[in-house]
Length: 239
Image (tube, rainbow, N blue to C red; front, side, top):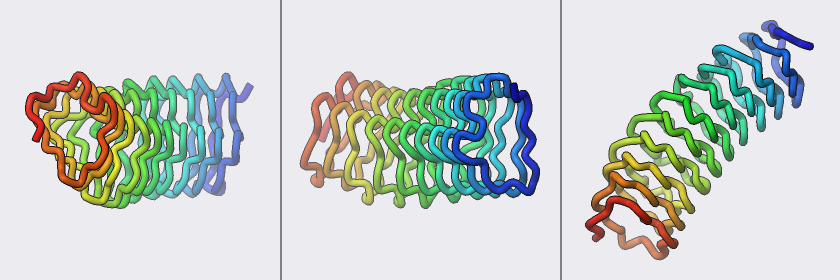
């Protein structure tokens, strides 16, 4: 029957499953000295509403921490955040605005933002980001802007950006990223250019349904192209 939570500045950690499945919880605030939020801490608190502001002091958000909090409407991530674990915001379908990823972020886990289809804002991957997990931004179809892949990124998961259909412009893959996994950019239909850098492997359906692409160059470094890699794209010239 918890309806509101206010954490004071003396609280440095919210533990695993601390407020999991509290259906009556509608409002909460996080203290200025909070450092970490545990796994499933607010998992399926479906009636939490309003703005979620992660303090600058937080460095890590645990697995599934806010999964299924479908009535949150905006998300602000603090500047100190290093790790967003898997499923953290999965299914937060009510999110409509997004402040962007903090500059010091190093890791985004699998399905971290999957199904946040109404979350609008420009998706900018910060320099220093090393990993984007499986389906991390799958179906984030309201995110916009030109996606820039930083040179620090060495791993992208399967379907990491699948159905991010409002990402625009030219996608440039840095030479440090060697593999584009299955479905990674499937249905990114507004991409208009693609630079594959020094990629060696292009997975199945990696760029399927990229209707805005009309021409690409396959670099000499490529040794494997998966099935349906460019299925139903707009390509008419491949060199």
